[in-house]
Image (cartoon, rainbow, N blue to C red; front, side, top):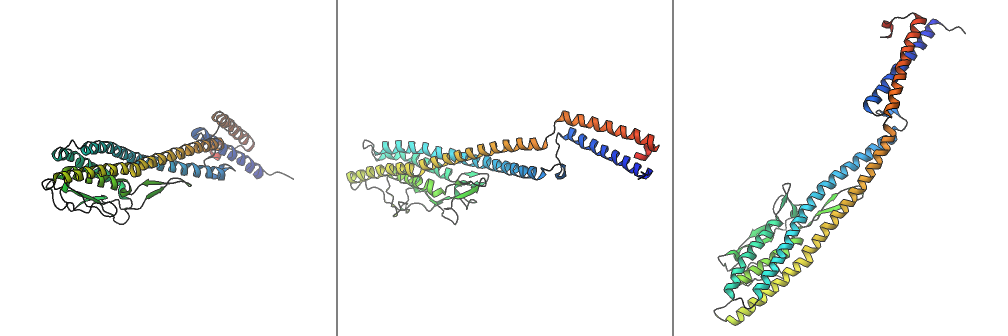
Length: 333
């Protein structure tokens, strides 16, 4: 069968097109360092797409872990401060319970206890990135408020009362989904961490300053409490004051053992789980990146060699086509 001039022309121009496409392909490889940039560049494009999706999802998880870690570390500092206050409260309660201290000497200790109580309230009302940490789902207002003063009024620091506001959402535990298989509690409701310590410090301060504190069935101060009757029956009043101070010491110890120390351990455990999760994600992404490198990245020396060969082939096609078909350069443009 006779090969026509038109067929020869089409065949040669087709070869030129192939060589031009090869030049573009290898030029892109040399420039980008990748042999696969578009879905059609490889039969493995589906696998590459899944690897990229997994890698990006894990990177999002790692970023979320970093934010939650920062949030928990901030709480860890708060709870550590509470432990320091507990130690000081134990010292002051032990000192005040010593019966060599009379009512006036005890009253001198009370101011530090109330200052400590106010500092604990401030910690309970801490904000992180403009939200109240211990407000749980109700994180736009402080979880602890000053409420009506004690009756009868002392005219001093022992008048002040603080209470957990108990609005809707305050007693919920806030959770965050960290990875596809891990959800972390990011905050504990404030009343479970601070109530017992705040109320025990309040009662301790009032006892040291010369006032009893009436409480409800749950041990929460009710806002009333008569002064000790040192003038009417000094011995009975003094013994009662000493007993109340010792009871407050027990309450401080209880707040430490049942609320603060467990919260410290809980935060430490959550931080450990986050560290493990971040480590696993990091290892996974390293492996994913290596797999993507194998599938996508080009041997730059091989790509450069292929580019030179493609350019040589194109130049050869030009020369052959020019001689056979007597075409000028303008015909290729």
